[in-house]
Length: 188
Image (cartoon, rainbow, N blue to C red; front, side, top):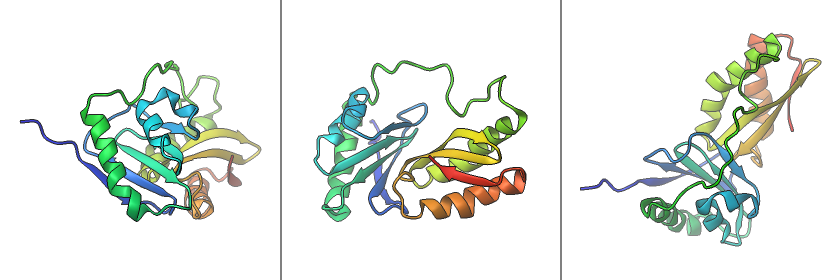
């Protein structure tokens, strides 16, 4: 007897975004879809973008964060959307298709990275990203120049009202504890 896939809705700090926790892994990494055109790489994200209230879909390894427009409430959407996600996954339909695998991501350490950038990427990978993923989001390295660390906020973090608090009171504080040469952390 096959165990049914569980899809559990969970609120996030961003009231426009709901995180749907999955009882299985659906992706190797994270994939951010901000438009229906972006979502063409994902049959599941495309299906979710088929609803006019969808403004973003973020796929994590074992969760999906969906961002909605303001004119509709999660009380109406959460359970039917969880059912749609479960039905798609149980049907065996692909989550992602035709992804051209990149040999490196922005968070991979490169030989050409300075020692501080390597340290930044390790802290992001081992400390920051796992915590942010708990709320249905992600943070990616963008750049580091003259003491200013630029990060890209994804998923539920992208439009979250508490994004600046997370960035300044959480991420920036942690980076400055470990790497005092970092003067500021900004979102791009």
